[in-house]
Image (cartoon, rainbow over all chains, first blue to last red; front, side, top):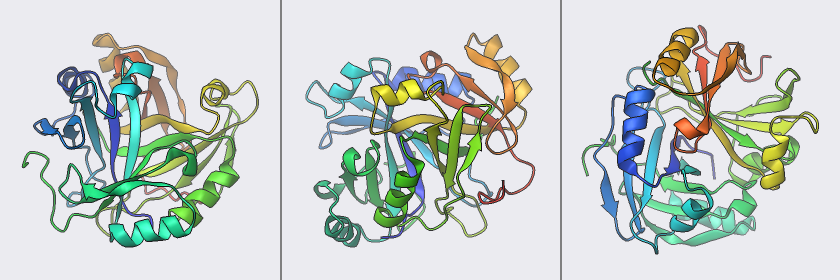
Length: 151
Length: 151
């Protein structure tokens, strides 16, 4: 596989509402999506855009993630980090199945089968033990530009 | 202040050499800078480029960070996370002194005075308690395009 664009950085939070206030009022974020539920993943999410390096490009997003309930996969992360914190990084790939096959052939531990993620394209996670302690999400590059407020 | 581009994600590692192998051989990274020392910050660093969303843009970089010695500010982080992990996110700002003044006026804890960072422009860190558990670096936007291999 070839490393694709850094689509977003996943940030766990006990409260998306409070995190939105922080990014808006303290850091000056201006493009903030509507929070939405991803019950199949056990999380609520909200994307905050950062500016691209050029006018026509797309910047890497901050993905705020809040547990959907106590069985949420990130509930454990928040128990260890009650204030929240950096949870994962997500790189785009052209073909998720080819990327998974390549990673498995190289001995990496891919967590489960590809499933539809927050941007509507297939995603999969790679175990942190293979990536220097960093939880890595791979997502298939969307075929059209993504609007964070259109879900 | 206005939230600027996500310049890089800082990833602590016990070995930049091994992390470079991982990003190159497992993830398919192709643009990897030469590691260099930042003794004033107590770290060695290496920037890995990710592709931009458009051909002429700049993607968000992964900044690998390895302790310079046992007194390094990230030595403690690696004691808690021996395999490494996500350490900080770095947003660009147009004017670091204006950003610091704005943050302080809003009650945020800015760690120290601006100093020259790995990209040669002034940087400063904001305490994680103000940012939902995320250590945030702010860096003044470089005035010219940055080449990761030109230090």
